[in-house]
Length: 133
Length: 133
Length: 133
Length: 133
Image (cartoon, rainbow over all chains, first blue to last red; front, side):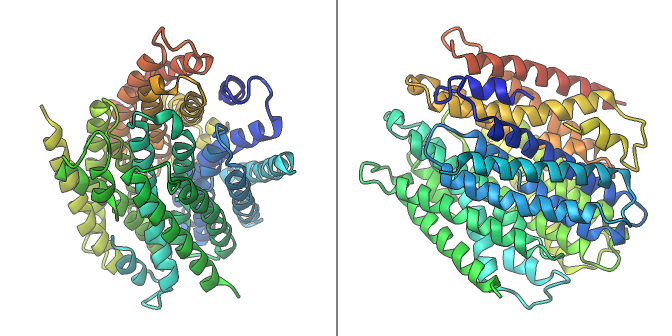
């Protein structure tokens, strides 16, 4: 991805980047893709009926990546919105990770997804802290 | 829109609808469309340079409508995520409405958009309350 | 929704609205909501394993509603993109409608969704025609 | 991103990956982020009034990344929808790249964005070909 390259050339940034926010944006876009795959892979498993909650939380989490787009906009004073979106993304990731790592869910895609969700949740928390006054 | 028709036939709802949540979902989808038009209409105005903040807040607000999709999913226990998304949607609407109703912004699209944003903000708050324990 | 109100105040439209495009935009946003509900309602049905294809096509169709946002932007010369998006939305609706109306799928949400998909497909085709040279 | 890792563990893929499609999915998600930054960076430039068309095409292109989500779903027989979405994504990228590389647009973010859009357009075309019968 080109997140750092693009954001560092933004006229309101000019090289003075917030590394925590950049990592968080990367994680959010990755989250959209990972969760969309995990939901679809779960739909393809024979035991789909036992994976319903996992599919749903993956879909919520994929929608939560609107956070990545909001956090990408830096022209104006929208810190309140970015912070609120980051605070919505965290529980979505946490719930999804918790479901994906259930021992019953031996699926490889769920294990990769759980790890990626904890990483995204961590990135959201650090980005929130980096913006706190 | 078919929000009530669809949600009332959901197997986990069976007619026992939460009217505050239904209104909120309708407002969120309307918000996506209204804000996308307002941002584009502002881009088409001669005085675009003075409308930059309005355009940006409209784009954040349009992304915030991921809230509508999350609130639409009722199969699982994702109340924490719905609530967090509603709490992110409210400030996005408030900021956008405040900017759109600046007296300087005499544009008709901004005035309609401001009114619609207050209505969406109100719907989000009432939906949050309807889900509180 | 405020589609006509908003679009008719756009500086590049000024009341000279394309009614076929307005109807199509309304249908696309409705489509996003209807398909998201139908996918989630299917996930909540006991026979979920038989509804996998319906869930998937609903999710594709919900994503296809990016068409609504693209068709909402009228400031610039993006007719080629609008037309291509409309041509992608049509088969998504057609496939989804066809699956939702399978006789086996006696679910009420699938029946409402199928009807709404045919209506959206019709709106996309008419909007395409309204833009043809 | 985890695109290859996730898709190769999908029960309908099982390691038998389509490399052209994987690259295309990565490009589409990158496209969403790059175009969102470029639109916002253009909004932050003093000469914003001259960048209106660039901003709009970037927003269309960012919406076009719904293609990435559709192409990520492989459980069912939705090749027709994937193909149609790829064919909508290509002109969106082409138009956006053409605008971003105008000599007048000396902004660094536009130059990076133009290069990324040509790369995404190429990936979409190759993915289409990889799926052709």
